[in-house]
Image (cartoon, rainbow, N blue to C red; front, side):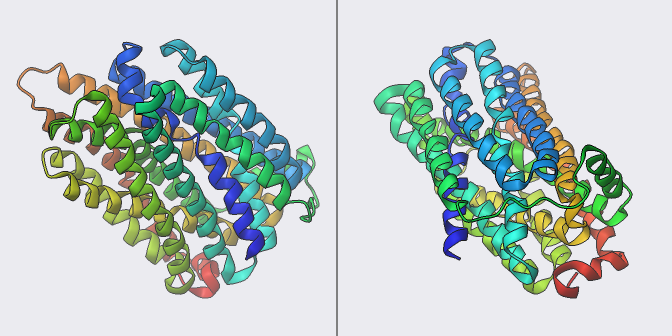
Length: 413
């Protein structure tokens, strides 16, 4: 457990940069004179870079070992975060540099999951992966709290610079936590073996249902993460706060939801160990969908009530992430696990990369339409996340009916 906590601490530190841009989005959108679709596109390009990173790093994990890949990618993540923090100054530079940051950020995710699957076995996996993903939520919260504190002191640039220190700390803690962990190579991890593993995953119907369930889950979750601070900022302004103060309030409230969501990741993984992978996934995803279709209509409600719903939304949105990861480890052979995570990452983060952009397009279109209130505009934008997430529970329900589901959580579907 001590090793797991150290490893999770590194993951939390890397994750601090993930929310740096969304935390100050209302401010940079004004300073860089961006439309909503441009603001959303920057976040989408970051996710697109992240998915390319996850895809390539997953294959490198099978080829060179999870530990070696993790350590090499950590340095790239640290460098790219610093470049973005110091040199992003307008739409184009942010598009390129935040995309590069995403491209270099997958090194602490896919290899990390593979390392945990090596170190933790049996019914410990769901909880262990829950802790690992909870660490990311904790890192997101820390990044938002730091950004919120830095906005009145040093503006959005100070927020970027301080949060960029997170990957530096993550790299150091990661090196320390893996000092006694072997770099395991599976038989058949040559280039031919990697593509053979990918074909095995594609031919595994149960595994592909899990992958599709994760894909639609990622559309909803990554869209939520991209736009939640901006929405809470808009809600704060509606309650009387001015621009910079509202941005700080929005980032702080979002950080609170991430803190609680960290417990949701552990809760989801632990419940799935005890109650079944598909049963808990279905429950969490359905509650999250209800939030997607209702959240935007709550623009004018008191902030404390909006915070409660936002917290429920974030908790249920992230709670099944650890379950999806544990499910895949139980449906795929270890030698193909990196390929499975790579394929899942391309589909999931590909969907998640498009979602913030579509959200922004709907936001712009709604505001350009005469007679449409701000509440309706936000409601339509949030509903795009629900529409994209609808097929997730259907895929998991189909998986639940298959004989392969008996392999999950020691026979608990």
